[in-house]
Amino acid sequence: MTETSRESFIFTARVLGALFYYPPDSEPATPLIAAFTQGAWATQWPLPSHALAPLMAGFTAHCEEPLAASWQRLLIGPLALPAPPWGSVWLDKESVLFGDSTLALRQWMRDNDIAFQRQQDEPEDHFGALLLMAAWLAEQGNIPACDQLLAWHLLPWSGRFLHVFSEEARHPFWHALGQLAQLTLVDWQSRLLVPVAQKSLFR
Image 1: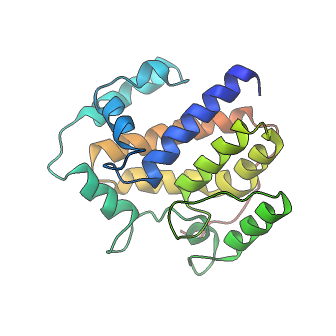
Image 2: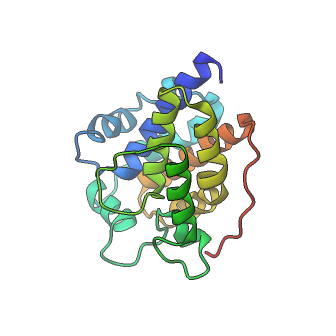
Image 3: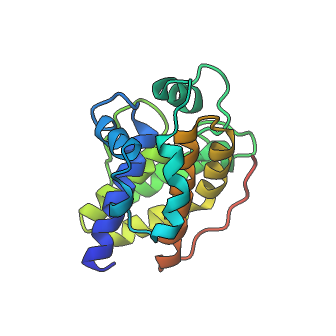
Protein backbone atom coordinates (compact mmCIF):
# COMPACT_ATOMS: atom_id res chain seq x y z
CA MET A 1 0.00 0.00 0.00
CA THR A 2 1.05 3.57 -0.59
CA GLU A 3 0.58 5.91 2.36
CA THR A 4 -2.50 7.42 0.73
CA SER A 5 -4.10 4.06 0.02
CA ARG A 6 -3.24 2.88 3.53
CA GLU A 7 -4.99 5.87 5.08
CA SER A 8 -8.01 5.35 2.83
CA PHE A 9 -8.16 1.70 3.78
CA ILE A 10 -7.94 2.45 7.51
CA PHE A 11 -10.67 5.07 7.19
CA THR A 12 -13.13 2.89 5.27
CA ALA A 13 -12.43 -0.25 7.32
CA ARG A 14 -12.95 1.62 10.59
CA VAL A 15 -16.18 3.25 9.43
CA LEU A 16 -17.72 0.07 8.04
CA GLY A 17 -16.47 -1.99 10.97
CA ALA A 18 -17.98 0.37 13.53
CA LEU A 19 -21.35 0.54 11.77
CA PHE A 20 -21.66 -3.24 11.61
CA TYR A 21 -20.23 -3.88 15.08
CA TYR A 22 -21.61 -1.14 17.35
CA PRO A 23 -25.27 -0.16 17.94
CA PRO A 24 -26.32 3.00 16.05
CA ASP A 25 -26.84 4.91 19.29
CA SER A 26 -23.39 4.01 20.66
CA GLU A 27 -20.53 6.48 20.98
CA PRO A 28 -18.46 5.00 18.11
CA ALA A 29 -21.40 4.79 15.67
CA THR A 30 -23.47 7.92 16.38
CA PRO A 31 -21.27 10.46 14.51
CA LEU A 32 -20.92 8.04 11.59
CA ILE A 33 -24.69 7.60 11.35
CA ALA A 34 -25.04 11.39 11.31
CA ALA A 35 -22.49 11.74 8.50
CA PHE A 36 -24.31 9.19 6.36
CA THR A 37 -27.81 10.47 6.98
CA GLN A 38 -26.69 14.03 6.24
CA GLY A 39 -24.87 13.05 3.04
CA ALA A 40 -21.48 14.24 4.28
CA TRP A 41 -19.73 10.93 3.68
CA ALA A 42 -19.69 10.64 -0.11
CA THR A 43 -17.00 13.23 -0.80
CA GLN A 44 -14.64 11.42 1.59
CA TRP A 45 -15.25 7.87 0.40
CA PRO A 46 -12.43 6.65 -1.89
CA LEU A 47 -14.65 5.29 -4.66
CA PRO A 48 -15.87 6.97 -7.88
CA SER A 49 -18.82 9.32 -7.35
CA HIS A 50 -20.89 7.54 -10.03
CA ALA A 51 -20.67 4.33 -7.99
CA LEU A 52 -21.73 6.08 -4.78
CA ALA A 53 -24.54 8.23 -6.20
CA PRO A 54 -27.16 5.42 -6.28
CA LEU A 55 -26.63 4.82 -2.56
CA MET A 56 -27.23 8.38 -1.40
CA ALA A 57 -31.02 8.11 -1.29
CA GLY A 58 -30.93 4.97 0.81
CA PHE A 59 -28.91 6.58 3.57
CA THR A 60 -31.25 9.57 3.83
CA ALA A 61 -34.59 7.80 3.26
CA HIS A 62 -37.21 7.76 6.00
CA CYS A 63 -38.24 4.41 7.44
CA GLU A 64 -40.90 3.58 10.02
CA GLU A 65 -38.59 1.10 11.72
CA PRO A 66 -36.06 2.93 13.95
CA LEU A 67 -32.43 2.50 12.97
CA ALA A 68 -31.48 0.91 16.30
CA ALA A 69 -34.36 -1.56 16.09
CA SER A 70 -33.40 -2.63 12.57
CA TRP A 71 -29.75 -3.04 13.61
CA GLN A 72 -30.91 -5.25 16.49
CA ARG A 73 -33.12 -7.28 14.15
CA LEU A 74 -30.37 -7.76 11.57
CA LEU A 75 -27.29 -8.30 13.72
CA ILE A 76 -28.30 -9.33 17.24
CA GLY A 77 -31.71 -11.02 17.39
CA PRO A 78 -33.47 -12.55 19.33
CA LEU A 79 -35.15 -13.90 16.18
CA ALA A 80 -33.14 -15.79 13.56
CA LEU A 81 -30.79 -13.45 11.71
CA PRO A 82 -31.30 -13.28 7.94
CA ALA A 83 -27.55 -12.78 7.41
CA PRO A 84 -25.51 -13.79 10.47
CA PRO A 85 -22.32 -11.67 10.64
CA TRP A 86 -19.98 -14.51 11.72
CA GLY A 87 -17.77 -16.21 9.19
CA SER A 88 -18.19 -19.77 10.44
CA VAL A 89 -21.95 -19.62 9.86
CA TRP A 90 -21.19 -19.31 6.14
CA LEU A 91 -18.10 -21.53 6.02
CA ASP A 92 -19.11 -24.45 8.26
CA LYS A 93 -21.30 -27.27 6.92
CA GLU A 94 -23.42 -27.08 10.06
CA SER A 95 -23.60 -23.25 9.95
CA VAL A 96 -22.50 -23.00 13.58
CA LEU A 97 -20.72 -20.39 15.65
CA PHE A 98 -17.13 -21.18 16.69
CA GLY A 99 -16.71 -23.53 13.73
CA ASP A 100 -13.44 -24.71 12.21
CA SER A 101 -12.93 -21.40 10.39
CA THR A 102 -13.16 -19.53 13.71
CA LEU A 103 -10.59 -21.85 15.24
CA ALA A 104 -8.33 -21.33 12.22
CA LEU A 105 -8.63 -17.57 12.67
CA ARG A 106 -7.74 -17.89 16.36
CA GLN A 107 -4.67 -19.98 15.50
CA TRP A 108 -3.62 -17.44 12.88
CA MET A 109 -3.96 -14.67 15.45
CA ARG A 110 -1.81 -16.62 17.93
CA ASP A 111 0.80 -17.36 15.27
CA ASN A 112 1.04 -13.66 14.47
CA ASP A 113 0.93 -12.47 18.10
CA ILE A 114 -2.30 -10.59 17.49
CA ALA A 115 -4.31 -9.90 20.63
CA PHE A 116 -7.18 -7.83 19.30
CA GLN A 117 -9.42 -6.53 22.08
CA ARG A 118 -13.09 -7.04 21.27
CA GLN A 119 -15.82 -5.01 22.94
CA GLN A 120 -18.33 -7.86 22.94
CA ASP A 121 -18.16 -11.47 24.09
CA GLU A 122 -18.63 -13.31 20.80
CA PRO A 123 -16.61 -15.19 18.14
CA GLU A 124 -13.67 -13.37 16.64
CA ASP A 125 -14.96 -13.81 13.09
CA HIS A 126 -17.69 -11.17 13.33
CA PHE A 127 -17.71 -9.15 10.09
CA GLY A 128 -17.45 -5.80 11.86
CA ALA A 129 -14.76 -7.00 14.25
CA LEU A 130 -12.64 -8.33 11.37
CA LEU A 131 -12.88 -4.95 9.62
CA LEU A 132 -11.77 -3.19 12.80
CA MET A 133 -8.93 -5.67 13.22
CA ALA A 134 -7.81 -5.11 9.62
CA ALA A 135 -7.83 -1.34 10.18
CA TRP A 136 -5.81 -1.77 13.37
CA LEU A 137 -3.23 -3.97 11.63
CA ALA A 138 -2.84 -1.43 8.81
CA GLU A 139 -2.53 1.36 11.36
CA GLN A 140 0.26 -0.60 13.09
CA GLY A 141 2.01 -0.91 9.73
CA ASN A 142 1.54 -4.68 9.66
CA ILE A 143 0.39 -4.80 6.05
CA PRO A 144 1.32 -8.47 5.44
CA ALA A 145 -0.92 -9.58 8.32
CA CYS A 146 -3.67 -7.24 7.18
CA ASP A 147 -3.55 -8.71 3.68
CA GLN A 148 -3.63 -12.26 5.06
CA LEU A 149 -6.59 -11.45 7.28
CA LEU A 150 -8.53 -10.14 4.30
CA ALA A 151 -7.51 -12.87 1.85
CA TRP A 152 -7.82 -15.88 4.17
CA HIS A 153 -10.41 -14.99 6.80
CA LEU A 154 -12.74 -12.26 5.50
CA LEU A 155 -13.06 -12.01 1.72
CA PRO A 156 -13.80 -15.72 1.13
CA TRP A 157 -17.27 -15.30 2.70
CA SER A 158 -17.95 -11.56 3.05
CA GLY A 159 -19.35 -11.08 -0.47
CA ARG A 160 -22.09 -13.65 0.10
CA PHE A 161 -22.85 -12.27 3.57
CA LEU A 162 -23.17 -8.70 2.28
CA HIS A 163 -25.36 -9.75 -0.64
CA VAL A 164 -27.82 -11.52 1.65
CA PHE A 165 -27.60 -8.74 4.25
CA SER A 166 -28.53 -6.11 1.67
CA GLU A 167 -31.32 -8.17 0.16
CA GLU A 168 -32.86 -8.99 3.54
CA ALA A 169 -32.29 -5.63 5.28
CA ARG A 170 -35.83 -4.24 4.79
CA HIS A 171 -34.45 -0.85 5.83
CA PRO A 172 -33.02 1.64 3.30
CA PHE A 173 -30.05 2.64 5.47
CA TRP A 174 -28.81 -0.90 6.04
CA HIS A 175 -29.56 -1.90 2.46
CA ALA A 176 -27.37 0.97 1.26
CA LEU A 177 -24.65 0.20 3.81
CA GLY A 178 -24.50 -3.42 2.67
CA GLN A 179 -24.10 -2.28 -0.93
CA LEU A 180 -21.42 0.25 0.02
CA ALA A 181 -19.52 -2.43 1.90
CA GLN A 182 -19.75 -4.73 -1.14
CA LEU A 183 -18.33 -2.07 -3.44
CA THR A 184 -15.57 -1.20 -0.99
CA LEU A 185 -14.44 -4.77 -0.37
CA VAL A 186 -14.41 -5.49 -4.11
CA ASP A 187 -12.11 -2.47 -4.49
CA TRP A 188 -9.85 -3.78 -1.71
CA GLN A 189 -9.68 -7.20 -3.35
CA SER A 190 -8.69 -5.66 -6.70
CA ARG A 191 -5.63 -4.14 -5.01
CA LEU A 192 -4.69 -7.13 -2.88
CA LEU A 193 -1.42 -8.87 -3.68
CA VAL A 194 -2.31 -12.02 -1.71
CA PRO A 195 -4.64 -14.44 -3.57
CA VAL A 196 -8.02 -14.76 -1.89
CA ALA A 197 -8.60 -18.26 -0.51
CA GLN A 198 -11.27 -20.27 -2.30
CA LYS A 199 -13.62 -21.76 0.29
CA SER A 200 -16.96 -23.52 0.03
CA LEU A 201 -19.97 -21.59 1.33
CA PHE A 202 -22.92 -23.34 2.96
CA ARG A 203 -25.53 -20.57 3.07
